[in-house]
Length: 387
Figure 1: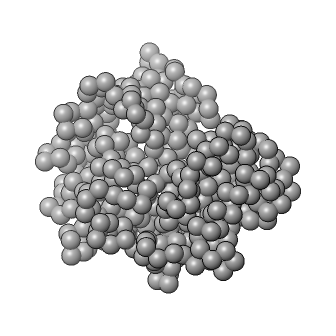
Figure 2: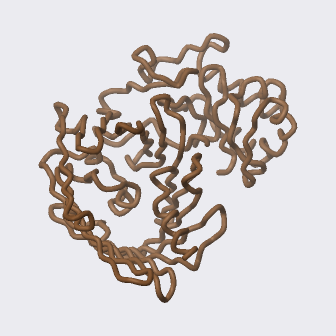
Figure 3: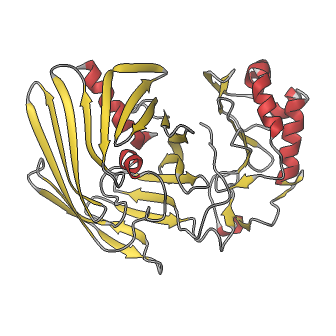
């Protein structure tokens, strides 16, 4: 029973996913990518922000709770050169769990190895079968000889039209859900994240090709939930409404024709004055431009200038010691006391490789290289030393 609960937590934890991860400023082709979706109910407000790589694949999913946007979870997606995919989920709430998942694809079969708080879980294997279009047709999880879960999926025109969830934990149970769609573009239409991975990352109510307009579930006495939409001039949804919630969508836009980006201020709230053009430098009071401040950060790290760095970090700071042990640095003295373990030699070498002439800025801030360092306005906001 403990294994079953643990596996459910692992699978479900993506909804409640420390530091900022890698993304790139250049994209291929004129595409429109989902930047955020904010869901509002009478009980809560939940916002998810997305980052993409140069192939328009999702590399990070950040979840925020409340109108003040408190970070409650972060999911990073790593695409390995051998074709495998790794997901790292970090949660900052009491009702979810940190975990990692490694997906290895062999033809139309994907095997999954989960890790929970750094401990490999081999007792709960999962096998995924995909069709030739890359959609999941079957997902099978064997907990033990008595307990299992089998999910099967059916499609039409690239849209999921039915899923069947069969599981056993002492007794048989089958749950069936059916979907209907509009003919408009989904928020994810232009993205290139593998379809099977999208199905793992997202819950129902979000279509991949078109938009769900009806969801029927037999477990809830054939409960039917309908969705209504508002669209922009390109045919992408900007608003989704149902009896349960209202969701608003925003997009990065035509990335080749418009280089507009956003940066974050100290309050964490964005306004129109923070929009900038990529070719224009970001003005910073003390150091002139963002690249000059980032260069000062690089110099301080190379010269072991503990005092300067400690004075230019936003606390508390989530990072690691020697790239392994997680730590929350609460103040400048703690940073100084752990300096050598936070800025260890291989991490410093990685930072030295990257040039401040090739920075990337978005709504979170500005990153160096592959996200080893993120800065805001005259402040370091993330130290990613576990690459």
